[in-house]
Image 1 (cartoon, helix red, strand yellow):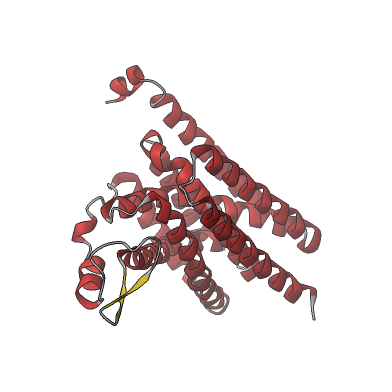
Image 2: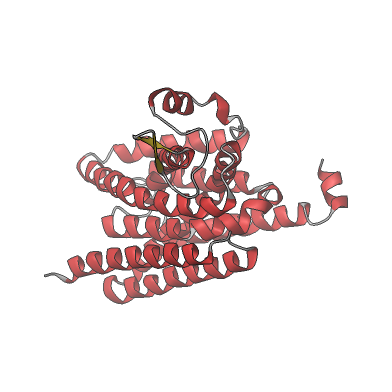
Length: 310
């Protein structure tokens, strides 16, 4: 068995062990995640991802390690914007805090499958039809403009997906603890928590349409694209509980993410004529995130500055 195959197997074994341990520990806690615990878990997931990056460095070399870290940073930064949507979803469905972690864990399991399929198909298409890179680049530029100048969707009640789900799926009127299904009068019904999980998975699929093409600008190595995506997603649960109540402070983050997507789109469009080195892409991404986060923290640091900004 080749080293590459062993690397794939070891990665997935590690992911599923981590998910199982995390879900088991949270079930034993039987209470929502505190800010302190969320901060600790967020730090642990970041450290685990960096350790894995060191393994990539040892096994696949410096270039692959830089590609992994750049892809990880792109996906992780875009995940912060996704958290805003998750906050809206949980608020709209009135999901109990104790059940939110369970939804996010199983949502990641679904993301493993969906993103794996998308990445393998995407890499295959790019390798066979190089012009698709330019289509991805244009798509990212359009997304960047919409993110930078548009407003995030806040009315989930108008979602066609939700209206369709409610019409087609048998759902209980209330939550049943942390269960996704319940048997009522001999019928097996979904609970609202299952509907939330479905919406979370669909939204993750939509998010992947932005993040995965963005990583293709860095590399088309299936292993690097896939593992950088999954490592970033694994840390999304704890990051959600850490940032969910502080999202209003990141007032300029969407603009920073728009700049990153726009830069990556330009990188794709110029890939054949003026290739931008990946280490330079990494520096640009780090700089944009540092500036936008610093400006956001400064602008919302105290009431007087908030009033001046408004």
